[in-house]
Length: 565
Ligand code: SF4
Image: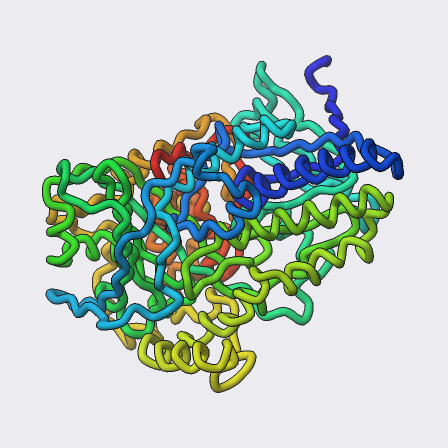
């Protein structure tokens, strides 16, 4: 059959993922090639380069899946386009006011001094989706070929070399059978592939396991960031105000805090970050986020406001000590996929962009030298460490690990790390994968009777939205007739061991009500996966205590459609 034939596309350099790392990298590479060719022409030495640069994005369009805390440090953007403001980069507002609040259930205590890492003078409140869409326009104008709606499903390997990626098949039904519109995925072959897939990247995970890229590194630790955008009554908010909070509604042993950013047009970004190394198996980050909004100080800000958008995403918190080796022959890894986020500042856009640009520098050198071996590409890691981005991450290398024993020791560790350039009391501080810290029901609650398992908490305040309402506001859409993209390797564990030991925590940690334990014929309960709700946050792949869930990309174009996130 004609449609069964797999097509091949050959490019020179392929960027996977349409986020800040890939887009900045692709733009930088086109700029470098142009400068190289102009120099060759001017000086008459060397050979001009003819290089095709392509970028794949799994979302329906570039920016569909972009979500972040979105206070942008413009350092990397300024390096890429010194005139970014004149070019019309769509930033909401310069930061005009910074605050840090300690919250109790009813009260707020503003810190008299904002700690230096949380000061945002010179930064901008931004919608990452808008910035990424703008970067995509610049990339296209520079000559990058963009392919939105194509999910990279697996790396193509030739021995120890990455030679490109295979995109996911389209038109397969829920039983794995080909439909009338079946199209096999395309093999996109490249001399160099750059993975900028975001946190817990699917292809990155394959390469990390295959090439043991995490050998000698600390385990990665994540948090989940859950966020809503609200439209407030006209004139009620000064744009550019940035507030971070600690305390309520999190208990003292759970890492996290909230962020509240006011954007242009009376929009309010509000979100909660919860460490995915929490202990209580019934902890529900989405429910905690809803409770956060009932705090009097926050409820006041939301008075008369209307929900516009919702999203969730994992955040790599492990920092530079958890960075996997970001290079193999023919491939580089950049941005959140390579743990290049500053967890103390809750910022990764600028470091991701810088990583993409450094990758571009090394790729140009590799193309000129006609050498894309692992040894040649290893200079990328050195360059990253030597750059301002690497130095910035080095200073916060023990940040998340400092909170291992809760909020108060964490704040003491942070203060010590700040005055010792990141070293603190012990360097490196020990760290373990977050899911290994989850307690069993018995460890958490002691002997029977257990408290009732409120899978769907009672939402008795109009500011509290349940998961399905929030999924609606994420704009998430998947073709229902396709294979489930959440692969559970052994569902009998869910029905037996997990039910008994942990009470099926997937029902709680998934912020989109994808996992449900439903009555089974003949008694007992079985796992039902509502895959079309998925907002692609990757939490289940990370936090499942048995590590039996694997998130794989659904058919390209599926997933959230984030607006103003
Ligand atoms: Fe996130 Fe997994 Fe739930 Fe999808 S199924 S929303 S990736 S936790």
